Length: 552
Image 1 (cartoon, rainbow, N blue to C red):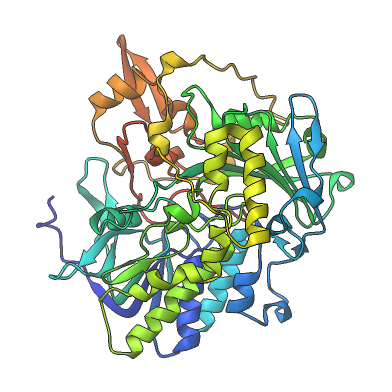
Image 2 (tube, helix red, strand yellow):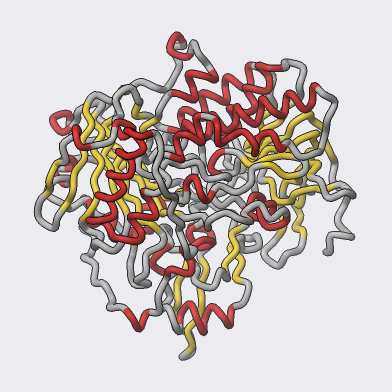
């Protein structure tokens, strides 16, 4: 059935439509209502519930929450239960580790005053605050289409149709998506969101900017023995098991109730197509400085998602006719601090303040250019500008020298208030991958099922679910190109970079066949980023599907 034959969408009108119930979207909604309680605001969330798709470390700088909800510490229900009490930085070698003196670290790297927390729980708490203000939050509805007026300005979004069968035809339970129309639309989908991609392309929002850079982040939540737990301990590390040419890092965060979050990040500009990020994460846990924490422990949860790493010089133009990008849709992560939620909150607030002013002035569906014009002079811009060279220095000079030079550059910014240069990122992460013929295969140890695991048992812990009788939401544009290049030239890296085992090359009747296990997808977007030919397009499946992270 073509779009012309589908029934017309029902529509609802609001003052502001927000896509994504993450820290940015919820903060924008709350701030709008604080400024004008009469505004009608709706928040769409593709996860089954608020927080279901939220995955982060997370050590949170409270600067954003302090400004949004100044009295939050008086609220007994707040989730910030574990203040940082100890801050450690380790360099890992194959058999040992060296602790870096805290005195050598630039002050911005200090985590005291921050909180170890589940960002999913933060979002659930913010959602309660939002609903108490009269904000409509619709979880389980994926925004799949941007709606425009005749002048080309954004006037709303449409949610995806439900009940489409695998052949693309409406099934017996078909339900047409809704059109949500607003005077302004804020896009807070998170990293590499499908609507943000469309808007960046349509309005050339990345023109004159450096390419966005990414990492793939893994996280597991463990319940450890009391004698191995130290509430408030933050331990960051880099080095082994990655080589000195491959960027990445790792962490252990000790939360409350004997819970420890362990995480591992691989920068997606790696060159070797045989690199297996998930297996590198599993190897990391076996290091002598790490493994003892998990002796006798129980793994509770697993998840993975992409992280924006381009920073200051990669932030696209935020405003477009009818709305703006906020949060990780814009890429506000501070890479050396491994933090972005504070900037997400601040960006949502900034957008809300400018949108509220525009509506009060009688404006609608024009470009709120004030958001773009002012973000660099706010706390967000100052936070990102002082670390803008850390990622490109690491990429250019490798881990040993690059990290040292990045530290020196941060100290220069600390002492003199600025750095005399701004480095470029150069290639996209997709273009960084080299042909398989230039590299050797990497042999990884088999999982022991106690400390290290395989991907499928890990995906089980993410509570991921997709209805199988629906179109595959991972769109391969040219299957011949995939076989000829992704497999023939690059050795099939999608079978390794995917953290959920979605992609496989399987021999059938003497031919290599590309199998897409879409039901495993944890919505990390790595395939959309790292495919060397940009031949895979991630689009949202039916609303409410994907992982359900309980407290990640």
